[in-house]
Amino acid sequence: MNQDHYLFPRRLTRRDFLKTSSALLAAPALAGAQSGAAQRIGSGKWTYTLDEAWGKLPAGMKYGLGCGVVVDARDNVYVTSRSASPCVAVFSREGKLLETWSKDFGDKIGGYSADQVSSTAHCLYWSKEGKDEFLYFTENVASGGKDAEGKDKPALGKRVYKTDLKGKVLYTIGNVAKESGTSQKFDWTNPTDVAVAANGDIYVVDGYGSQRVSRFDKNWKHLKTIGGRADKDAPKGANAPHGTFSTCHGIWVSTVGSEPEIFIADRANGRIEIFSLDLVYRRTIPDFKAPCCFYQHAGHTYVPELGARVSILDSTGKIVARLGDGAAVPKEEKDKRVEFIAPHALTVDSKGDLYVVEWVPQGRVRKFRHTPMD
Image 1 (cartoon, one colour):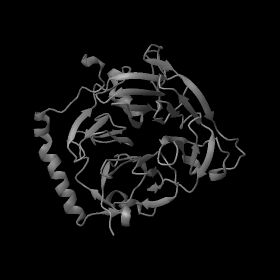
Image 2 (cartoon, one colour):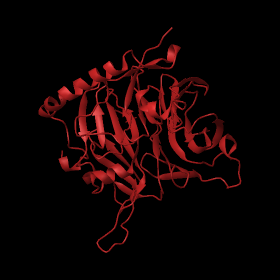
Image 3 (tube, rainbow, N blue to C red):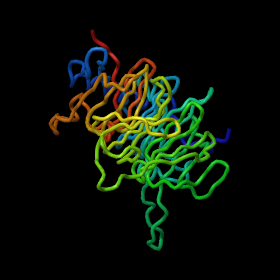
């Protein structure tokens, strides 16, 4: 297969690992020495222990603002952040760094530099479709800079693109230069997240822009769009008009209940809006601190909240746990404590371990082992 079709040819060799292994092994030892006893969040069934050895990068690389994190069917963990090196990092469940995708990442998605990829990076979604696995990347909008005459170049981002796990770009929709069999124009202003249903239907939220939610079939045929902003004089928060949004940041096809439903994280309104698969409003779950997105595991829904915590809901929507609320942690201690600062995305592996990235400059990429206590 033509390597030019791939986004991220930078795969670490054995020599690379030998160069960096001593640094990677030393970091957890130092972290453990500094922290002393294991750091935990939650309680009872919902107790998690911080794995301080996990997610370390080699010297010369660093995370940026934490954007997305997903696990594949083998429990490999993919992390995206607003960093040019790496744009994407892939770890094993145990914490071994498997791949980094950086320099050539942008070349294969439209000639972007690594810095431009970093400026547009946002959410990441993993999808199992039949026997195959795919990744969906969502890009924010960013300035294209100036041309030689000082005029504004076209804006960057405003796209969703689908790849396989090796990074082959299969389809791009949104701000594309021209349409083809694998690319389609669509008028998003600043999309934030994507989700895929069992029948292949695809849902996208324009959460930093128009506040619209769009549904497509598996071939990207547009089926329906709902949403938009409420009138400026309308109620805010949980009482805002249903079907309108204020930062519809995340979307998920929930299958934990008796039938599939669409969950939308209406972030600035502090609520989750729930719809049928054909985007008809059903109900609202209030009382969240800026919910960002979703993940489900073992009949439960996990919600990272930018307001310094993670919530876990059962299949009825009842909140069964709230983890690591760091809102009251003094500013000078936030990086040193186990509590969350600003969770932006999370995922859960097959063993129930939790991975969280945060919207802070260093990404704060962390793994929490599920360690339930009686």
